Image: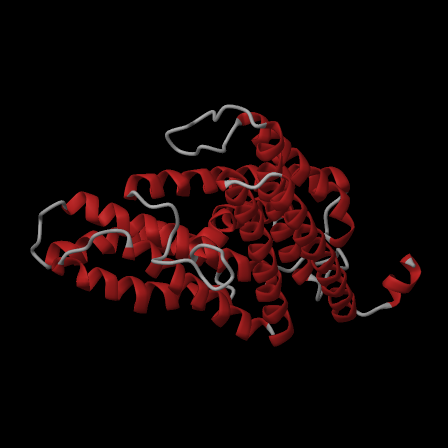
Length: 329
């Protein structure tokens, strides 16, 4: 089997990987549906329904994530950039919707959506990695308050600018690192044409961490460690989730340019960043008095787009720069 896989071209190997993943998702979806039917009959109630709804949301997020990355890979790098730019656009819109703005913010909002976002993703496509790394946290963070000051509105000036800057940092800066992984080169390592594996690696281990953390919280039923932020978060379930993500990273090292130990270390860093980022976004939702980003649930039963990608937005920059620093690429 290994010899057969090695004989395939990089494109065929990635296609085989997606076929395997879709097969696993089909099996998990069927098993989850059957388990939900059994649990609903055995222990009906509002609490059980809420747990089942959370499981369906996680499964739906996994399906959507895999479909998005499959489309991005199949359509090519240029389409992938546009696709992830659109995801960043709608995620930022969800964030801004829950952050009150004033008339004086209109210039800054136009700058964020129609200048900062396209320029950031253009820098990725042009492989200007050094500039795209500092464009948002240096140039944009200095330009945004200037645009607001020119509007002459000083009411809650610091708070309004901080919210917009934070939204750009998470939704635009964080998401732009995902397609950047597709463009990384590892000269001399025999990894040409296989960067899609790197994206899959990141998405899979982060999603594994979130799913296992959720399942562990359901089974262990420990008291929440930070109840003011999350009613389900506990350090025990978090540790199990990160451990599962790290283990998955070590197992999947064969699809990366990393050795097993390297994959384990970098994977743990990404999983910790993603899970902590998800916790931060929960704190922001508590601050805004909402349970999910977006005005309403989608037809899949999941919450807003930002609820699906928040962990990835935190994990992608950490993973990308860790890889670049370690391998000097």
